[in-house]
Image (cartoon, rainbow, N blue to C red; front, side):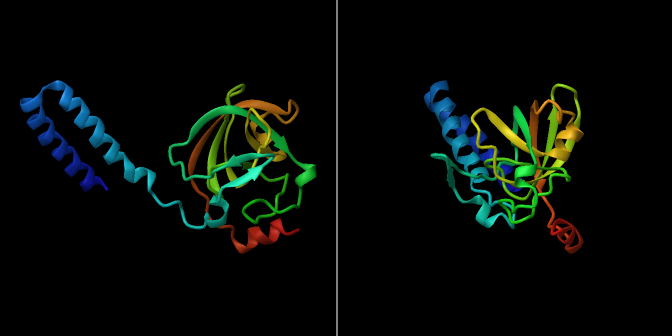
Length: 184
């Protein structure tokens, strides 16, 4: 990818100089805009990490469509809430068993499973969480976290917090030992 980018930049410089000498600054601006759009297209076509298959299909909840996508530069601020008893020991969207006593999270469109970094903007606490479920499906909320994650982030008692969520990368597969622990 790096060599290709260098080649594109060199070609852009040659074309820019030629257009400027022939047609002036307006043509250069149009050419740069066109080439920039072409150069950025491969980023959109990147393949998602392996193992995200079925969790990347568009889906609908309460009449709203969600379109999961590989978003390597995801960085967003919003409200997080926590969920626990009602979902404890139930299957998550990626097939794992939800354990409210282990730190994890749910997001509507990021790939599953992933690792995200969550920062509580109200107290500065920061944790990396395994993203293994879909949600929240409540307007105005960005993220649901397990009860344990809410404790680690310091908003268990309050119920919600303003957070920053950054995508770190794909999560490793669970080992057979971890899977056995989740099956209890």
